[in-house]
Length: 414
Length: 97
Ligand SMILES: Cc1cc2nc3c(=O)[nH]c(=O)nc-3n(C[C@H](O)[C@H](O)[C@H](O)COP(=O)(O)OP(=O)(O)OC[C@H]3O[C@@H](n4cnc5c(N)ncnc54)[C@H](O)[C@@H]3O)c2cc1C
Image 1 (cartoon, protein in one colour):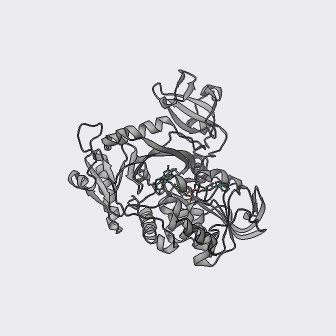
Image 2 (cartoon, rainbow over the protein chains, first blue to last red):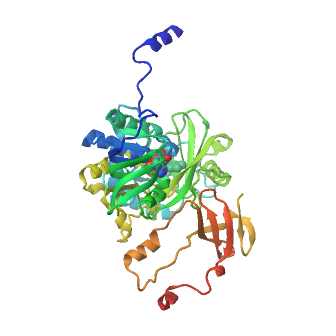
Image 3 (spheres, each protein chain N blue to C red):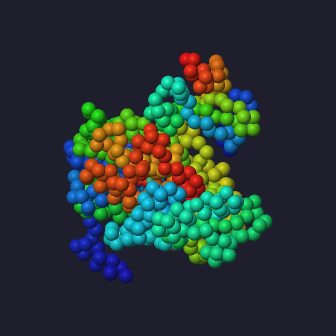
């Protein structure tokens, strides 16, 4: 109705208030906390600092735009069926927070409890799944070994034929598995943070970190120098280069990770399906597209280019699982740069520089951790105490050879 | 298809090769402390720029070095390891050093 539109245009509520800090806002001389990186993690830390610790003199800096890094590029899988007790406890908490996140933020992040099925094509995988199911159940999450009949009930279109390269012989069913709208997670946290006084400065790059007497004192940016009481980096693929500005070396390698979506179809697949052996996983989004992802690129690179080889490998694997997708057109394809650690676990907590905190090493699995990571990191920054739930993930573990080995449970399953 | 120029086999599809990590010097394993050893094993520079790294041609199990730009993915140069190493480096030789 054009008339209704005119009426709306004349109302006081229009134009709507900025949800985020307006673009021309000047940087202050000093902030209590500077957060480098305005992805899901950076904005979640800011939100938790402001809402639960009353720390609002906070600036979040991003060299690009809010949620434009891996937060914009991930395939949104949320699960907690990891292998080690430390990881299961951590990701379980994140899943709990995701269930209520739309209410918490007053912003629809579209959390969908789909369930996740990981496929076994050989006996070694079955052994690994039994082990994971035991650990998972012990820690109170829904995770069980399933046979072919149950698999057929979970995903009727899945190709269970033996006339393929790697026939499916069983699976690990994780009823708690879910997805959420990835961009909305960053927007929701960012909006909630800005409402409480946090400033988010986009197109503002951290270029150097000033350390005096072993303590961080200021961040130099393309828009000038800002002093800070403390600082935290949450920059995913750029973790090593930003940490180097403070002379900190990290056990991280930056690898591209690619994904793609097909044209939309009528709803036919609800759960998320993953095959570590075929290096592929998929689910059908609420728009009807099949989102398809897989393993990392074979060598490190700081570049979000995509390759035909990777697309071919994803396509050949997915048509083995879902033959009807052979006719599908690929609508979009992209890559993100991921910060991979040797044990496939994150690095959270203290750094060798006082008052400088790390939120890094999220590789191909960090979206699902966004709420709990923000909550725990905010607690650390506000109180100075490392919360128990993130203690196993400290940087020091590599010096003590106490890795949290998730290689088996993470590769190609996110 | 991206090509990598193998010093032994000439230009081949990069899919025929394995990435072998950054070139860095091993501390003497019998003399160094465990922190130094941990840094050697886990901590790399992971630089954005031209980096010297190990590569192997899988079919011929031939190891060599490459200078590659990790931002543009351009390979500046590949060369045999003998350009840098005149003798075998292992814990025995490191011991003597
Ligand atoms: C294709 C793909 C699929 C994935 N699938 C999943 C999945 O299914 N499930 C899952 O849990 N995880 C998944 N991940 C991983 C997940 O996306 C990341 O771990 C997570 O989004 C990291 O969030 P972040 O906020 O730490 O980083 P990002 O969202 O990358 O944010 C970092 C921000 O830092 C900014 N920045 C960098 N350098 C500077 C600087 N010098 N100064 C200022 N700002 C800077 C960047 O511009 C960026 O906006 C996937 C990743 C990719 C690429």
